Every structure is written in C-alpha cells, then in structure tokens.
Image 1 (cartoon, helix red, strand yellow):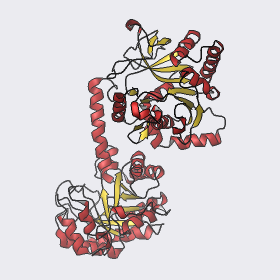
Image 2: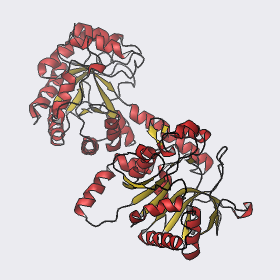
Image 3: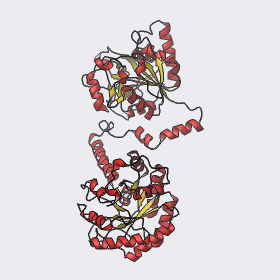
Image 4: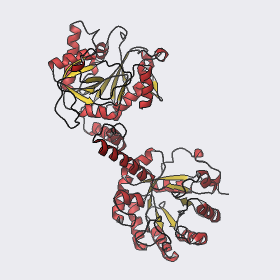
Length: 550
C-alpha cells in the first residue's frame, strides 16, 4: 500500500519551504500527499490560481492556444507559448508545469525547449508520446503514437538539457486514449521511467476512472503517477488518494469558466445597450488593480517619488445609531456584516482604491472602534453636536486630496473609482433614484442645475444647487449617498467654510448637507451621478439588505 493511500489533504503542512520553483514542483509530485495543479493560460489567470491557494500551476496547451484564438493542434508556435509562459512566471511565484505537447518535434526540439524553459524559471514540462503536429486527445480515435525508442530519445534529450537539477520531466502516455490497452500503457511507462522521466502522466478519456485506477494498481508507484480527470470528473477524489496517485491536474477550468462569464456579460450588455445591470456583478476595476499589484507600485512610488500627493479619507462614525440591542454597547459602524463590521468593509473599499490614510471620527462607545492602521479622532460631544462638528474634530486631517464619507454606508468600488476620477475640486456622489431602495427614508435630497441625462457618456458638468431633506419633488435630481471628494483646493475651501460656520456660532447644529449647500453658493460643487449599488444602513431591514449586498 502506498503512503498516498492514508494521507489526506487536510494533513497538508503549511506553506512549502522557500524552495526554488522547480524544487517546489518536485516536492509536490514526490510528496506522500495528493497534490493538485490548477490550469492557467495567462499572467492574470496565474495570479488567480495563486490567490485561490493552489501550490502549483498547469500551463495547458489547449487553453493557451484557445486564449490566442487558435486550435490545439500546434497552431500556436512554441515561441508564442514561451512568451505566454514568461508572463505567467513573472506574475506568480508558484511552480509551473508546462503542457509541452509532443515537444514540438524530435529530440533536438525537446532539448532546446527544456533549455528555454529553465531560463525562464519554469519548473517542469510534460511531453506526450504522439507525433508532431499533435491533435487534442479528445478529438477522433486511435491516434498514432510515437515509437517507444524514439520517444525515449526525447526524454533523454530533455533530461540532459535541463540546467536546473530539480526540473521535472513528466512523460505522458496516450496508449489508453488511442485504444492500445493497459499492457501497452504499462510497457511504455516502464520504458519512459528507465529513460529518465521523473513522473508518468496516464491519460484516459473514459467517463469513469477505471482505466487509470487499473494502471495505478499494476504500476505500484515505481515513479509518481499524474492524472487529468477531465473526462471522469465525477470520480471522488478519495479514490485517487487510495490508489496512490501523486498529482491531479485540473486541466482547463479557468478558461472554460471565463468563457461562460464573458458570454453572459456580453449577451446582457448587447441586449440592454447599457452597463447598468452588469457593472455591480463583475469584478471591479479596482480588483484588477489589486490582482496586478498596483499596491506594490504605490509603495515603490512613495519610495522613489517622494512628495507625491496621497489620498486620505475622513469617516464620520460618531453616532450611536438606532438598531436596538445591536447598538447597545457598540456604535452602528461596528455592527457585524457577514464576518466584518460596516467600518471594516468601508475601510477595505477605500484601501482597494488606494486610499489608505484613513481617519475615523469616533463618539459613542469609542473604545469599540479599534481597527488597525487607522487614525482615531474623538468627538466627545456626539450626543449634542452634529455631523459638521464631527468633521471639524478632524479639521487637521482635511489636507490635500480628501474623501469624506459617512461610516454607515456600503457601496461598490466602482462608485469610489468614478468619484476619484471625476473632474472638479469638490465632487459629491448622487444617486439618480432610478432604483429606489426598498423602505428607505430619503434624507439628503439634491437639487442640481441638470438632472441625470441617462447617458453615461454625457460629460457635461453638473453643478450642485442645494442638499436638503425637504426638497420639492420637481426640484429633486437625486439623493446624496454620503460620499464626497475634495482636491487640495477643495479641502482648503472646506476648512474655510467650517471655520466660518464655527465663527457664526452654528457649528454644533450644522450637518453636512448644510456645509455642502454653503460651499455650492461660493464655489463650483460637481455632481457625479450613480444608479444604485450602494446602501445606507439605518434600520434592521437595511442591515438585512447589507448582508445580502456583500
């Protein structure tokens, strides 16, 4: 009985030791634990595989070819494939096992391929015993196989050419797929092992795992066995463990999932002639920025480009809120929403948009607000003074590019992204009310010089006239969602207005709509229209919606 039979993935130790990529792949394949490699076909998909927690990548010939719009018949040249592999290796530290098809020719092509893969820190290659140019194994029947002696020459040439001693060479056997039977598969496996193959990939296109399990039983782990259960996908993984299989390759599912999602999204946009229903359902632009490492670039810019303006945010979270027992010993901003507080979620959205200098104005039960990485400012008069007073408590933080936001709202990242990119020294996000929120009390109604045109390409400036809770319906253009952006100039105007209101003796009872209206009387305050995809948590019903919102 192999040690693979008794060890479960739950027994997996933590992260692998800091080995080189080839050594890491070798450790996975020779581990007594069942290993898994996930397909990727680009730098971005490689990052997603890493993010999901996989310990290695299968660079599929099928999906790389398909992502280039080509057939899996060696229509993509090996240099095109190499270029894709280089981008994948740059994008992740995970070891990559490459689907090398037949090696792109004879022994000479294989040894050149292996040298180039080692130069690019690719951890291993899998070569199949068919003829060049290859045909995908799932197309047709009885595909011709290479002569055993000739294929063994390819293996020897590859092993002799590797510049990294840990580089992994996997020999893929197509005897079962081509109908030559178990005996031929075993004969080839032994020859390939003797020629220097580090592992054997036994392939089958039957809908059950009977062939590969029979192979594993007869093979008795003379060297590690790798499988690709695309056709027999319903087989419980436990059976692979009990059979002593070394490694399972999930061979093409990231590309297949992407095709389904892209089709659905394109169809919806084509039918609607609008992004309105799609925007909140797809990955945000900020998520793309996160995946490709914009945070690292920002850190580098701080190091190498000193003096660059950094966005900051002030979160007004002093009020208790009125949610019964939920706000008995904590402020509303700290209520749990599926494992994170409202404030944590808000700070997370800000951080994903590059706004990491966050000041939180605390008040009720201020000791409950202890998020790491934030600046706390206290409004000890929260029970008697209003929002403008809370903002005044953080006056010293209103400096340079500044976001001001209520501490009890949730919104999609693209809303903040749009606000950050909108023109104007003061810009406020206003919901057009095209999607009324169920049971919501509309509070901060907005009158502007132009209502929402319905055209997202309309870039004519819209200027604020007033924000008020009592606005006649004909004048109402939407509702301010509690999110505003100020440039360095806008921040100076905001500080000046706070000082004026304080000098007039009305700061204690002033709210933010009052401040924004006063600013609009003196300066140009731009309106940035949005259509839904945000939530103000004021009631228990709002809280229930918030848990579905995320």
